[in-house]
Image (cartoon, rainbow, N blue to C red; front, side, top):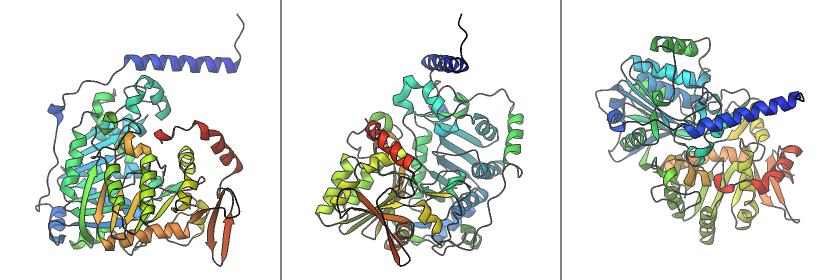
Length: 531
């Protein structure tokens, strides 16, 4: 027998592993669950709790909702932790990505401490980013008053990362490709946090390598009971499984709790940096308001919505929008614009429906401005390919395009504390006619429209809309390039104004030649409808 080379040996082992994994996947299924036996419901607001009393006394009218925008990640993380620390009855928490890092463990510790006080904690996670982390979640779930559930879990290769688990579930691609992108935290049925931030260092300015520009909102009032209903609809839905039904361990509950104590203790989970006095809007920490017992918020009428948890499995990619979907509701709000639409979407991939919407808006004279990531600042270069294919058509119809520049973001002087880290846009926002706004988890892309589930709010409030425009404009005018058609011929130009000098570029800003070549090579093969 001819001996194998080291390369042949590695290829053979990789092929054998792949074959065995696929065979395992073909023989594995998700367990059967008696959902009626494990169903539970949100606990409504009560003025008997401290948070409930503060929320009730702060409301000027029962039909209104109060909001505080949170553009600074440090404040946003602290708000979540403060709600966990002050909760007395319940914490309902729902996230797409909850990372096992200093930020994730810091919040988990606060949730665990609440559970030890007798607070019922329900944590619902999408299963995409939990690969190899079952021990962490099992150690959290080993505490009293804690329940953890997974949306659309992978049945096998649970100790592997995303890629291996998708390979192991190749026969179930049409199922596992659909993810729960919602982000929500509700405390005592009284106060909530909604928006685009996940739970990981990079969403709260705690990463040394890269950090996201993002915005979310603290809210109380009329919208909170509907948010509780939306959480329950997911928590008790068919795609959601109890953690212990799919994740196994040979450790005792006591051993798991000891692991949790070690992982979330001060050595492995240091506290965040001290908060600055205020953010760019002038707001201080939410703890100051909670200590005083009175909330300083902007009030308006609002409604919240989330995709049905079965939506990804009931609709085909690229099909007509369901009237109950988040994308449909946001598009309807945008179509009602009479003067101006300003949008921020980190993943901006205009499909047929959104291109038709932009044409309609421009035909009736509505000014449209979109801020998105540049090729260099995006964390998903293939998404940029889907966007770049439509840039010239959008510009020709009169849409103003701005692309976030990591270098400009580092150079500006605003107190966002990016330091030397790479800045990326992650905020999903829309402002309509300077009086109506959307904030939530939805991107302007096909994946949000028909593949993933989303959650968000449309709010009627001119003062809040002005604050959100101020936040977007800081990024648009100080940290982005304006894109235009080249007036001298084919191609595009990127413009910025640094002091008294206008800068005009003819290549993708901040990008390397290899990144541009790779983008060009991949362009014909990118499945735009999956982006």
